[in-house]
Amino acid sequence: MTDINVGQISEALNDKMDRDAHNVQNPSAVVVEKQDPTALNDYTWYRKYSDGWVEQGGTYTIASSSPHTINLSIEMADANYNVLLAVGYGGNGDATVQGHIRTDMLTTTSFGVNKQWSSNSGYYYWQVSGIAAS
Image 1 (cartoon, rainbow, N blue to C red):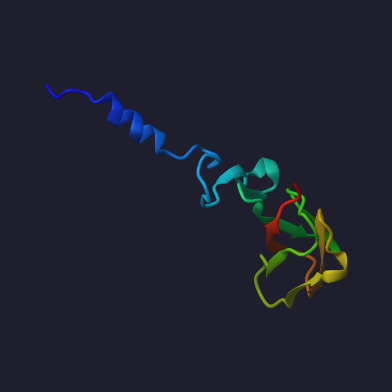
Image 2: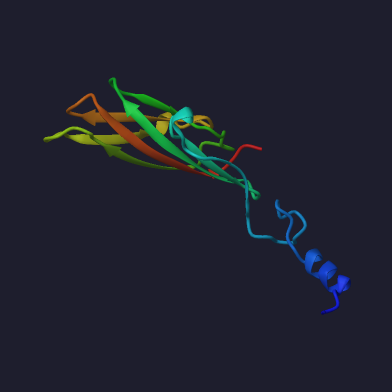
């Protein structure tokens, strides 16, 4: 039978990074909080990282005229974050489908979108990334 080297095991364990990476100098950012998209949260999701970066997104159903306000799950540090927007139309046939981000409606907790649509039904698929409020 092989002898167990407790010293070697201790050294190996000491070299491991804690879950939040606070015991490692200049660590790569790690996810410290998350929400997966489900029907209960209206398919919104986010990932917060140990360095303050956040990525969040979701789906927004369009059922009325513009503008639309999309609320963020995680508050941002300021209004200088990135917004990606895609639009979708679930119907058959032709429809003009466009959405425009309203830069005058960017806040730390939401952003605005104007729709230009030949139908009242559709979806915005959105993603925001940047620094979260502390």
